[in-house]
Length: 166
Image (cartoon, rainbow, N blue to C red):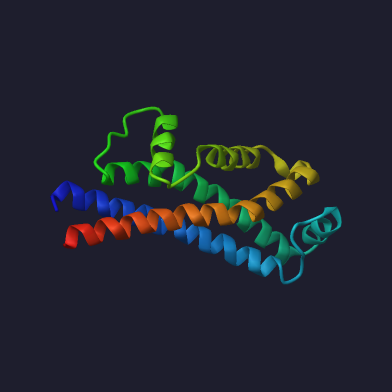
């Protein structure tokens, strides 16, 4: 294994671990929130969250961790996958996504849904209860998709590491 390959492997491993950390904290926050509130949320349960400081902190953590996770995956992880595979990443992001889809890592449409959700968070969702409820419910619904993406990346990394050891 060349020096460059080893560096790209370490970068991929680091970016994957960072993404997994965000996902774990997102899932942990959902587990805590679900101790008092049923998912998916409705208007009444969301009002209860707003009136409970601990629940509000968990919902804020969910939104924060989802944003960090989506940013990490889009800005770091995906490029590090292609670099590790020896591919050029000096291309439009859509081309990167299409290449990852060919590798069975992501589905491009699914990624755009995650990105759109991230963009909704960037706007002032706190002024609109319905938007906040929708964001939390969508994150809850899509967290398995994110988990599946990260599992695919982990499998790719494991498979490539086994190849280099042979």
